[in-house]
Each structure stands twice: as structure tokens, then as C-alpha cells.
Figure 1 (spheres, rainbow, N blue to C red):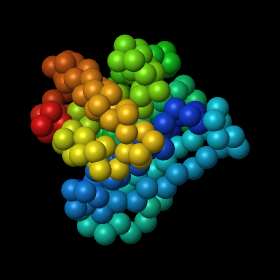
Figure 2 (cartoon, rainbow, N blue to C red; figure 1 turned 90 degrees about the vertical axis):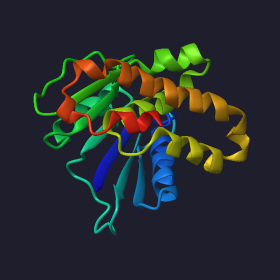
Figure 3 (cartoon, rainbow, N blue to C red; figure 1 turned 90 degrees about the horizontal axis):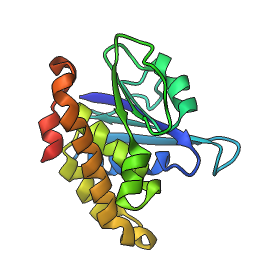
Amino acid sequence: MHEEIIFSGFGGQGALFAGQLLAYAALDCGLHVTWIPSYGPEMRGGTAHCTVVIADEPIGSPLVRRPASVIALNLPSFEKYEPLVKHGGVLVYNSSLIDRRPGRADIRYVPIPANDIAEALGNVRQANVVLLGGYLAATGILPLAAVETALDRHLPGRQRRFLESNKAALQRGAACVLEAVPAAPAEQTANPAAAAD
């Protein structure tokens, strides 16, 4: 296994946190991981993205030019990375903020109304975790339970009060995708059942 993922959004949307959470979960599962953050000129309101590489063998290079998966939290991220997703890849995006027709026939698009879901759960800032849950369900790269465990182990002390709501956001994002799976090509869904563990 060698999976390359980019999380991208505005500063403050939590793209880096979502990528770091996935990286921790993969490490806890005994996989090889790299996590590289990148910031725009402003922290909050500027651009922020991170690259995560997960593999079952040592990773030769953490640099990614054609990611297998992209999680886009906003329209500029969607527009930037849509052309770069490799053939057969997955683009998970926040359809609450992105109203754009898919431009390619060779990748899978996974729209999730992440802001709407997170707001209904009580904290719109957890849209990033909603999208992460959707990504796990769409790809089956890690079980949902592995990321829940990573939340238990790695959520900073000042954020512990959001532990259960983060888990709820993760589960709701996964459920959103799993409920739509019958309409998606079966061969492009790696193992959605694993995400429901």
C-alpha cells in the first residue's frame, strides 16, 4: 500500500489537523507515514494544506505531485488540485462551499455537505473531521475506529472537550458517503465496509 493524500483549505478550516489526525492513526496502525504542512502568507484566512503519505514499506520521498486523493475544504483548493489527482483517484470536497461541476471522468468525486453536517452537530469548525470521515468511507484506507483511537490518544488537552463531537463528526461524514455508495461504481470503492468498523 502506498497512498498519497492532500488536505487543503483556508487557514483556520483545519486542513492540517485533519491530515495530522490521519497520520497519527496510520502510525498507530504500524504503517509508515509522512506529514508535511504548508501555509500561505497568512495563517488564518490564507491557504493551508498538508501532504500525507501512508505506506506499508519505508517511504522514499514525501513529495507528491499527483496525489491519489485530495480533500478540498474550499473552492480554491478544489480548483487547484482537481487537475492534479491521478487517474483513478478520489476528490472528496466540501459541497457546502463548493458548487462546481466535476470536470473529469477518470476520477471519483465525493461531495459532502461538511459545513452543513458540522453545523447541525453544533460546531461548524468540525467540517474538516466530517470530510475525513467521508474520505475513510470512500477509500477504506483505514478503519474509522483507528481514527477514533487517534483522537483519544492525540487530541491536545485544551481540545479534549471536543473529543466526542469530533467522533460524531467523523461518523456522520462516513455515514454520508456509505449511504450514497450504491450510486457509486463498486470498483472505485476500495473497502467502505472497513470504515464502518
